[in-house]
Length: 260
Image 1 (cartoon, rainbow, N blue to C red):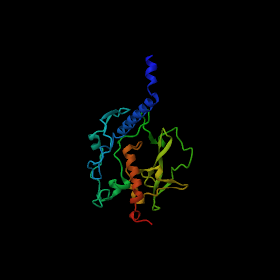
Image 2 (tube, rainbow, N blue to C red):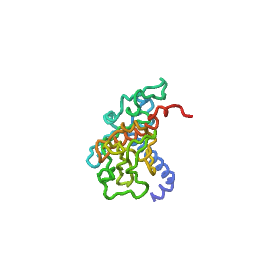
Image 3 (cartoon, helix red, strand yellow):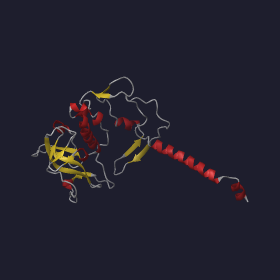
Image 4 (cartoon, rainbow, N blue to C red):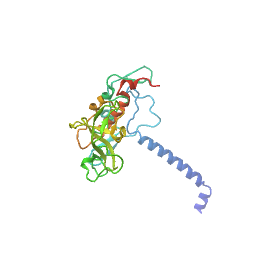
């Protein structure tokens, strides 16, 4: 019989394991090239094409249709990379050798460099799976209330230099996740309508105050402000987080000094 003769001389186990290894190698190649749709080809510290691009080639452009009427996105795309690239950063190299650190040449928090660096994300609010804005003020959510922990509304905001800089007046809630993402503060403890946003993970809510260690009193007016009072875009989130992170090093010149 043909079947008996063929399989009697053929090692099915060896064929199976070799087919698995071929499939696995192809899977690794596919996953790695799909991972290279953004940020490639690689560049060096000066923005020039890096000499070592790695063993995998950049994949061919693919166009994705974004949900909720937000258009299309083609990656990789030189036009897309150029449109979202930050150029002319206020930095200078401290030495000619490759890998040398860069020093800010201006106000690093305003220029968005170093710990205060931010990425040019989409200037649109994040949406949930139904196309609704995810992050909304608690004051506009009738079905939400503070059920655990301490409600910070009404508490004074104290900066890292112990200066009272304002008072919490509202919170921004991630509706699908049911968690607080930002606190909304008024720069005047008595209230004057000059609101700023505080990331919840960059402050500590205590019994009598909200403590913000990373910023000093004079830094709060410079916090980037959202364009809308009832929502915040991805780019605005990025810049606000960068401002607070940058203050950890740049709020006071003493913080940049050598620490023992």
